[in-house]
Length: 271
Image: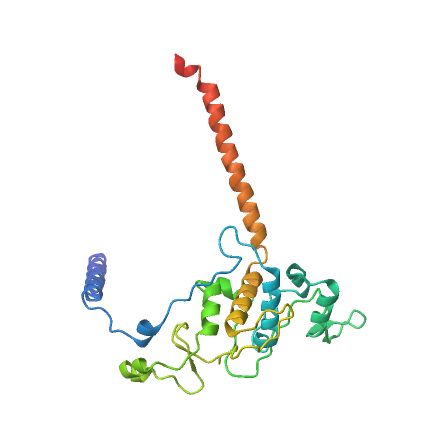
């Protein structure tokens, strides 16, 4: 008797769940959700043409150095790149003396080899960029892998940096409850349109480039986006080269196999 009751109870719950699922699916198909400010005004990232794009992409070392300068002078106050070591900057074209000077500007916690005591000391080329101690509200994300962590990563970073603007009057008219709150900043490239980070790159000439490139807001945003592509995938060029070698090898092996097949079976097909 108990077994029969258990089966009946199980069948009842199965029917109820199936009915609920069917009603929910029918409602979703026939009654679309009401539009929201995020759905209507959120924009896809802009197009961003970087030298590293595509299967033949390569890094522009000068651009990477410019991007690092933007990171160092603008972004590093809030955002870390903890997966990058100072010595990795050699791949950008910096020499040993320059890397030592860059590392020495940072303070890292290290162990004294004589006493074993952990204390602050100037950075060394073998150290990783130290985490940033942020005094404001929230926790700014580490940027080492940001272009991998976001969809259309480089274009997203570039669009976000250049996308700050006043909240559109049309948005406020249609969605008055979506007004940007105090301490927030409107940016249509951010998922919910408002973020706590103020525009970090605000004017031309905010950074001075040593190669003579004009440091416009657009140029600085492109350069730091390119730099963050490198921090996320420093071996990108090697991966591309290895991929082409393997494609060439597979094509060669396929042709060789086909020729061997023709040679082995040539006489057999004649019988």
